[in-house]
Length: 118
Image (cartoon, rainbow, N blue to C red):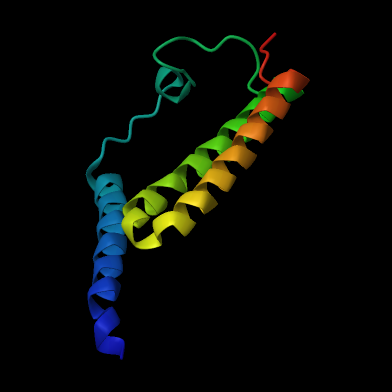
């Protein structure tokens, strides 16, 4: 029974060893000359403006959650498409119900104004 999982265990062990080996090797041979310029934070090569502890509007988090929700729902379409022929008409009706529920949720969010960025 364990023999069936041996390739997976081997792959995980190689991946962990490669990750740890890369970190250790780079820390051993990498240059270690910290300076004020090297340790200063930057984003895309531009000096930061303001504090990193700035508060975001709740609207930002709502839109982020909605994006994740609809993105995850879209991921469910792939396995359904792969098994579409085996599921037949029942699978088509189930996905239709799923899409209708998703669309109703989308219309609700749209009507509530949650997608308006101000």
